Image (cartoon, rainbow, N blue to C red; front, side):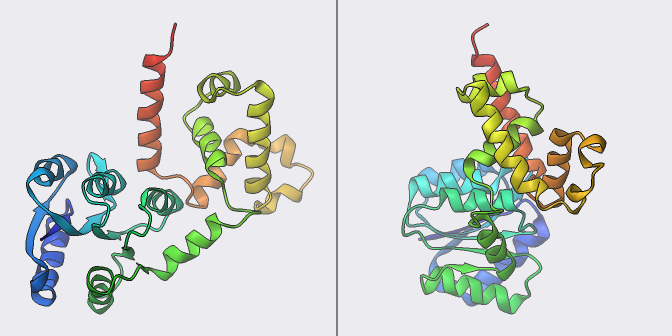
Length: 243
């Protein structure tokens, strides 16, 4: 069996390596990778049973790497180790976890004792160990009133990358009324949380579409990684789109 550490920061990678080597030496050989390309080279020749995985790395997201790991071995136990508890990361992880998979999500601000506890829980005791702050974000995403659905997120990304209603209609295969309905749902969820929305000047002061993006960023609903992936997906759609 192999323990794979995927982390592009050298100090963090060595820190994790030392802890795993000292406290979990019976798990197997420790292998390190700094990017998705290195992971792709390792996967065909190694039986990856355990992984500590950074969520934000140069050139590739930890979510993409986790998807590859679980494609090779759906029973691989992964501890996501991240600086971020923003909703795009939490939602991204939640969406790709295979049924019955064991995983953890720990913030890098956790002390060494908490890290050892999370590693033991995920790797040896088959427990899903989730940081309290991350659980709070998970609860919010499941809130039927304020939580965004996957459909809400689609429309949020569409307006964040600058698409018009007509372009959204073409991309999502919706009628104009369908696009407007999705936009209205998003407006109601985000603007209802904006304290300014009760004032009479709100509608004449703000561009609603732009205000939505601002509020989404403030709430941590958008991240650079998520927007980069969405922009790349948009570029591919434009290239495939008939002219």
